[in-house]
Length: 115
Image 1: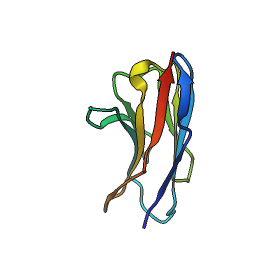
Image 2: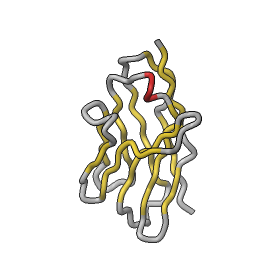
Image 3: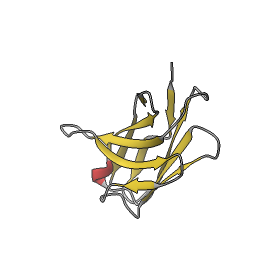
């Protein structure tokens, strides 16, 4: 059973920064990609950023040039550096690990942006 451990969420002022991290407990799985999604109240879950096993990255238009996703070499750990946070970035952020067999979701970490 693959478990994802997320950390780094919290309260930040608008314009501030946070760094989210996610580690998959099972090192034996084959990871195709890892990513972060978010879901704000009353809205659908949406892709924020994704990184493949060969380090190709993709971002939603709303976070491009503000957020950066990275993956630790040879580890199933991904980080999301979030800069210049806006009110609309507030949401529960979920880590996703994609393998050839299945997708695995984290439990989510809350990001709150205040004035």
